[in-house]
Image (cartoon, rainbow, N blue to C red; front, side):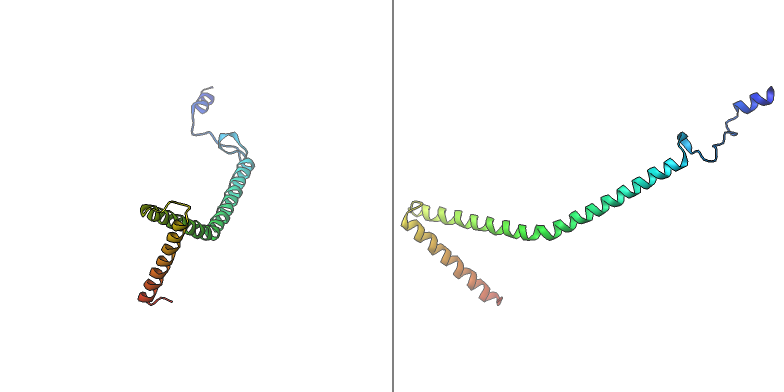
Length: 120
């Protein structure tokens, strides 16, 4: 009886069965969970790489288009403010001629800057 009580109180003699893992799950179940997680992470990595490549290829042209549109909007706003400051109401012939003159002035200034910096 004493031997049996001694073994029952001893925690060092506890051994896992050969085909059982901790938490009472069979080893094959843990292997399947690990394999599924590994496959899921590889799929996530592949999707992330594809999204990164799409963003790297697609974003720069859109950014240039957006920047160009913003620049045109800013120039139109500056032209309108300048012409209205000098007494030309928006929508009148004088305002349209003033805005066209400002476009010519900007183009000449841009060409002069390019000529001075020797960029062709």
